[in-house]
Amino acid sequence: KQEVTQIPAALSVPEGENLVLNCSFTDSAIYNLQWFRQDPGKGLTSLLLIQSSQREQTSGRLNASLDKSSGRSTLYIAASQPGDSATYLCAVLTFGDYKLSFGAGTTVTVRA
Amino acid sequence: DADVTQTPRNRITKTGKRIMLECSQTKGHDRMYWYRQDPGLGLRLIYYSFDVKDINKGEISDGYSVSRQAQAKFSLSLESAIPNQTALYFCATSDRWEDQETQYFGPGTRLLVL
Image (cartoon, chains in turn orange, brown):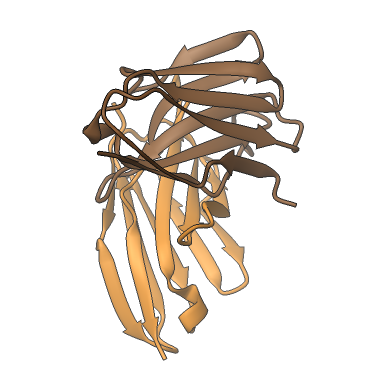
C-alpha cells in the first residue's frame, strides 16, 4: 500500500524567502506525482504534474523535482509572497492502482 | 462558472439521519471520484466511477453509497450518519488515467454530524 508523507506539516516564512516542501512515498512504481494547492473553501488546484520518466517540472516561480528511485519529491517556491499562503498536497498515482494517494499536506504561511 | 460543483457546501445533521451530497461537472469527463479529508490526514478515496455503469469502492467505503445518475452527476449518500463521518468531502473528475492525467476538484462540502 502506497504511503505518502509530507514534512514539515506547517511552515511559516517571511515574504521573499524561498520555500522548500518535501514529499516522500514508499512505492517507487508510479505513473506520476502531482502537487496540489488547497485554499479554504476553494477545493484543490493542480500545480505541477511530473511523469515518472521526468526529473522536474517548472511553472513560473514553482519547480518540482522527482527522484523516483529514492521515493522523494521536492516543491520549491521562489521569492514567496503572502498569496502563496495555502496548504500544499503531494499525490502519487501508483502502477496497478486506480486512485491517487495523498500526503497530509504542508500548510504554508508567508508573513508580509 | 465552476467546472465541478458540489451541493451543499456546508451541512449539519444528526446521528442516524440519511443525507446526500451531490456533485456535478461540466468538463465532460467520464471519471468521477469522492474523497474525504480529515485534519492531519491526506485525502482518502471513498468511491470512484469510470463511467455511468461502473462503480467501485475506494479504501473507506463502509457507511457510504453512491449513485452515478449521468456522466455529469455523481452523488454520495450517508445512509445513517455517524459523528466520525464529520469531515470535508471532495468530488473530483478526470479525463484519462496514466501519464498526464490530473484530477479536477470541486470546492468541497463541510459535513458536521452531531
